[in-house]
Image 1: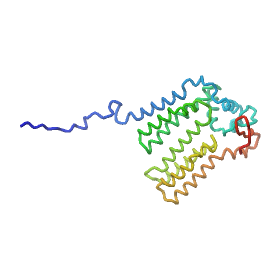
Image 2: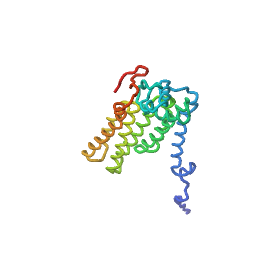
Image 3: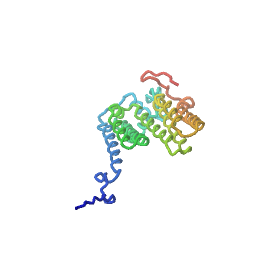
Image 4: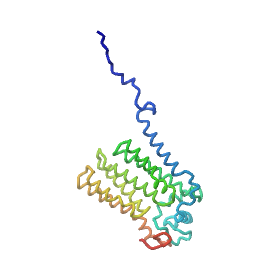
Length: 273
C-alpha cells in the first residue's frame, strides 16, 4: 500500500498575496497617489488656456490685490466702491497666488487645483474611517472623475474651497464619533468640524450650513457620550460655528475707515448685511 502525505505549505516561505505590488498593503497608498495624480492632471491640464475663469471673480481678484481694504472685503473694483456677491475667503488664496506668480489665468486657477486635489485626499481619509480602504478609494475616484467637479476646479468660482471645507468638516466630524471614545478628543474634533463649517460660510454663506442639521442629528445618535454631554458638546460647537461664520460680518460692521459697499447679486449690488 502506498500512502501519500499532504503537508501544509510553510506560511513563512509562502509568497505574500501583494508581493507583485511591493508587499502587503503597499498598493493602497500607491492607488491613492495615482488617484490624486489623476485629479491634479484633470484639474490642471492646460489651465493656461482656460482664460480668466469666471471674469467677474477674476476681476475682483485683481482689484483685491490693489489694497488691504480691497483684500479684506473682496472689492470688485480697484477703487473699492463695491464688493462681489460673496464673502472674500475663496479669493484670498488667488490673491496670494497672483502676488507670487503675477496676474495670469493659470495663477488664478492654481489654488483651485490644489484645493481640488486636497478635497479628493480628504474624502478618501474620511470614507476610509467608516467604510474601509476599498470603498474609500472608489469614492475618491468617483469624486475625482465627476464632470462637475472637474469643471468647477478649473474655474474661479468659490465652490472649490467650499467643497474642501465641507469635506474637511466631514473628516473632523467622523473623528468625533469614532471609537475608542475619548471625551476630550471627541469634543475637539467636533469643534474643529464646526470651525470648518463656519469658514465655509465666509466662503459661500449659508450654502455651507446645509449639512449642519445632519451633523447635529448624527452626533446626537452616534456619539457614545452621555445625552447631557452630547447636548453640551453641540452647544459648544454651535458657538464655534457662529463665531467662525460671523466674524467677517462683525468686521464689516466695526471697520473704522472707508470700505466698499457690500454687494449682492453679480453686477447688481444690494446690501446683504
